[in-house]
Length: 148
Image 1 (cartoon, rainbow, N blue to C red):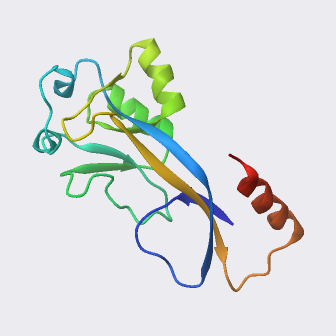
Image 2 (image 1 turned 120 degrees about the horizontal axis):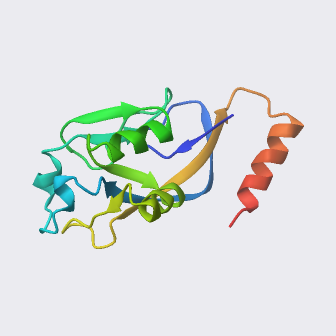
């Protein structure tokens, strides 16, 4: 069983179970040009790499379609460190982003096309439809589906 963010493209022969959402904030380093206070338009984002959190089984779909250069990382802490060092911008999970914002290592920014400066991603669990689901997997799926 795999838990992932919902991405485009549905692999065949898989069962999908929606288990919730994950809120992420649009952030950059405090000294990054995107934190200039100017009105940020989509084209401004194209000037800097998007630091994108993906996994081996991710379809690697851009969060923002056509968002120029992208640096793919597989660990959340690597994503945060690259953004903190000014290599680009990205969507970071709200809880971690807020911690880093409070420490002064990240700032949230609000482009013109997004008054909230955040993204909400659906989370799903999936398994191969040809596989037998055992009692432990069934229990886990049922518990995940109960979460608000």
